[in-house]
Image 1 (cartoon, helix red, strand yellow):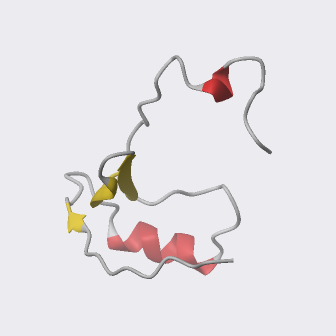
Image 2 (tube, helix red, strand yellow):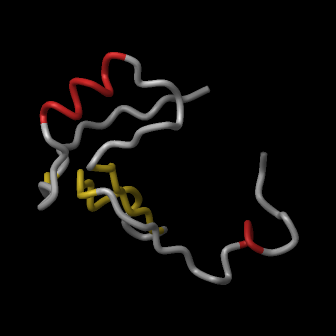
Length: 79
């Protein structure tokens, strides 16, 4: 199977509401799975003409999903 071999850098957009250091340290003592989330997330765009682009680490927030996305229609997503 071929592997991607490219280098890129991520633009970093800091959160305007970062988690306090004391809270983060307490969470990291016993993080668990799915109980806590970071205050940032990775975001990368893909289009047919430009491939992967627009690499960012940005503040945590909602994802925008087109209502016509096939995963929303009759369970057509691959699991």
